[in-house]
Length: 127
Image 1 (spheres, rainbow, N blue to C red):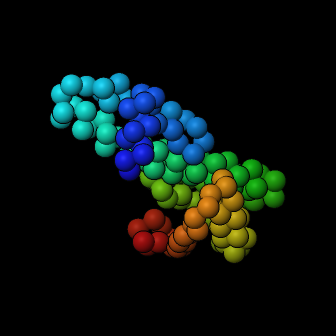
Image 2 (tube, rainbow, N blue to C red; image 1 turned 120 degrees about the vertical axis):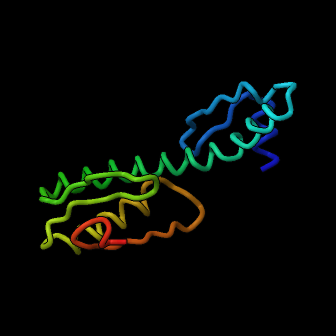
């Protein structure tokens, strides 16, 4: 966390895994409250931004695989770190494999990625 704050103070921004930048102009503020908000953003932005990068990459991989296989199932919605699919029931097991692989290999990371999948007749039932 301290390294992220130091990086932000030296460069004026922080980066996600995919090198997207979040500029933090208030990191140089003389007001400690304003600077504190920027420091918290320096810690949080790379984590949240990298998660967003990962789910976007996974969505692209999954979408392309659905198209390639000419499946009837589709990505319907993204809610934070969750993907919601409308799955044609005969394709359920195939879709589970596609989603799992799409998430696991969305981007190279050194920590294990935990994936949880549930199904139901609607989103509420799947939770």
